Image (tube, rainbow, N blue to C red):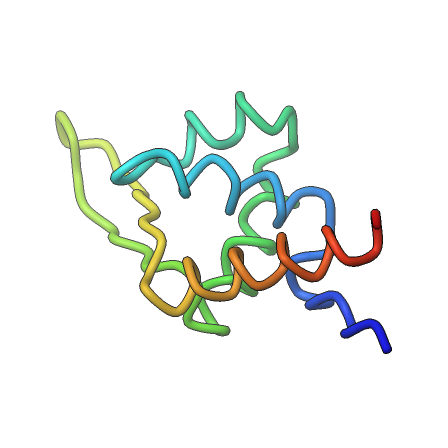
Length: 93
């Protein structure tokens, strides 16, 4: 019996954000927006969902007096992502 894929990570944009954060210590909002080719509004909603689930940490600060939003994957997020990949491998086999 195949396990169910994590519906939170099964979204293309959320999976993209998580994939990027798996290989980076952290990433700012603009970087994630450019790399995922998403709109600011959609990315903001998806980041909120990942943050509410505890998969990422969102840090709000300022750079040159401009607001800066930085995202960082959590231990829970890393575990969820790794489990997602393992379940996906089962579907591929």
